[in-house]
Image 1 (cartoon, each protein chain N blue to C red):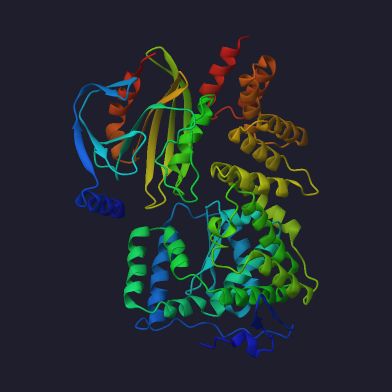
Image 2 (cartoon, helix red, strand yellow):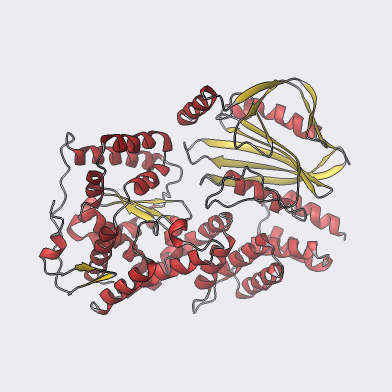
Length: 189
Length: 383
């Protein structure tokens, strides 16, 4: 954790990272996704974050909320980094377990260990989708994290909100806020 | 340090061109390596590795199964001979082919190597190679080769940031062994195998198997895709050299039956980790090879089918169904076989087959993490 914090400070000092407050209330994410916040968040803009938005309560080395809006066929869930690393790309005919596996692949590109805890159907304002809960042991510092994701596919595009935070303090502290966001997901037809 | 110690015993190793000549005289291992003075560069390297070992002991990535640990430790001990008390094996859950040994006697063995070895002798080939580096103090030689203090400081700086097991990968890259050192380690490894009663011919096989796997990748470059190939002699040269060495040391056992018995309890979990890598072509090559053994194995068939299912290129789902059906016919298949079959049938609107497979999955795994999702599918498919 300390190492990640140092890295974050270095990025901030180098001017590569900007942080903006996201106010309470309904927020549009991209063109078709709207979520409603019951508290303010911090929107982190930094190289390599895309294609989703990255929000955090405590700072991105601690907790991360990633919001994906309108991921298209063949598009990767992560910024392309080149080299030998595998790309995890969305296909519009993916079933929920495959989409959950896609996020698993993305989250474990650094060798972290992932375990699916639960996968269940969920509806987002009438749009069929699903929720998945997971745990993760982060490779870089061996921190145990808990996470949750909400996702749906509409008109061949993927919409998702995925959160993770250290399991002992921060995840229990913010999970209600995250669930509020997940339940509020509204996708324009 | 006697850098030519292995020659002194009469094992001639004339390094020349793409290979070397050798004779099978007894190789005299050095006496046990004493802990160096902390004030020396070697002492500093040991201290750094001691710190790393403390991290590994605490790591959640460490596989703590005592029986598996003792089994692999015993293989390492038989290879190390008099050095056995100095070798400490740590089995790490990382789905890649790798093992390494630090100057302080810490040996890391990754689960991806255990998954890929077909028998005890093949694991011994890799461990013997790493023990060869250890006995010849190759890490220290490489450290001394890092001439400038600033370059060394960079290495140390990277250690601070990289963290965890990545640290050893970093130092392996920064202080990678020279090709001559790799050749020496191959020679010593083969001799240690022979002394321990293993068939040295298995050494060439495990490297060839890995090479086939890495060549299956779309970008097909072994050196770019494996930490074990990044600095080693060309695979062709290595294979030829190891085969020649083995021809001079015929006989020995493979330990295949014991290996199967000891590895079986862990294999399904390691296969799941392999699938999660998302390196479909490599995994298909691996699983095709491992599944081609004389005894049909439902775990390999399921795993390969799952890789096909996730890759989902044209024709892959048919191949996946064939593998899942074969796994079920063999028996003892992982419950996920039926989930995967059911999901394919569902996508193809083969209603009755989908329902039967999904129900079978829930019967076999009633507390599956995705049970709610599967139940919703069954409901959606209708009664």
